[in-house]
Image (cartoon, rainbow, N blue to C red; front, side, top):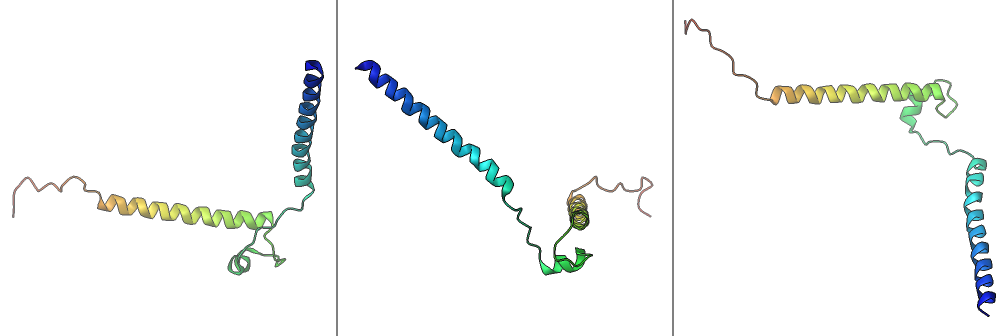
Amino acid sequence: MFMKNNTTLRIILAASLFALAGAFAVSPARAEDAPKKEKKVSKKILEKYDLNHNGILDPEEEAALKADRDKARAEKLQQKKDAAAKDKPGEPEKEDETGPN
């Protein structure tokens, strides 16, 4: 009787593992077949970057948008650094060694 239960348990375990593996194997196949979602872009961005006016940003247009965003971030970071440098107390100005005039 012990052997019969052990075999049944093994069969159930093996079937469960195959079913679980099959469930995960189907997911990547579905992901490949699914159409890619287009990124939603505001009208303002489309007006500026959609050069061929097809309603979506092509790779070249996306690259231009990314370049402009990166440039704006770099400028903002530089402004913050400049403002921090102004606020940072530096060495006090040295007085002329000849004394006051």
